[in-house]
Image (cartoon, rainbow, N blue to C red; front, top):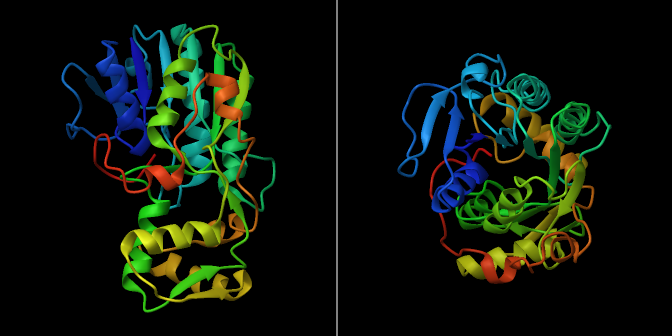
Length: 299
């Protein structure tokens, strides 16, 4: 039995669908009792990684775990520390007790012991819980993940469609290495097998680098607009971002995201071919490609 935490989120739904297609017995742990739209034969149990409630029952008879729970923005009680760090520590603890043979954790390129970047810092803290455990593990660090329900690219697309001009945070020169969600899934599924990158941290990204400016230009062409770009210094955007965070349940940008836009988010271009033996799809080829299950944006 494979347990997928976060199996109703963006990446998680694609992982669950792939595992179900392969005939694997799959169980999804999700908060709340509402039945998710899952493939036939996939079991759903109620468990909360933050409180730990329901996790022992979710781990019963489980051999492998794909831990995909995460939040990309803090909303209400959903904080980086509680969900990412604390939730991962709880999952690891219960996996050890259950005798799980392999755990795959999806972290992020940029994870580091630097509190100036709260999201990346929480990811790094979660990694420490994984690497200190007795469970056999693999940590995957993807760059930006794109797909039909992703948050980053869809949010940019909505902004470009609606705004009279296209605001660009900073100088637009920050580099990214977007990777298609189904390519991330291929890496997750491969690593669930024992002997595949055991006790390794593996960074993954797409087949090309793109600056923030180039990503904006790709999306402008996709939506068919010639609206001009206007670069806004990051320092000038922070006060407005703080206000939007305070009053909106889903702000267009947060202060943490602005800080992360100042740092490159990429790894080696041959990272996936070397580690997994296939060439990932480029953003240029995959942007807007409909694929896989639809739903919410949360990973």
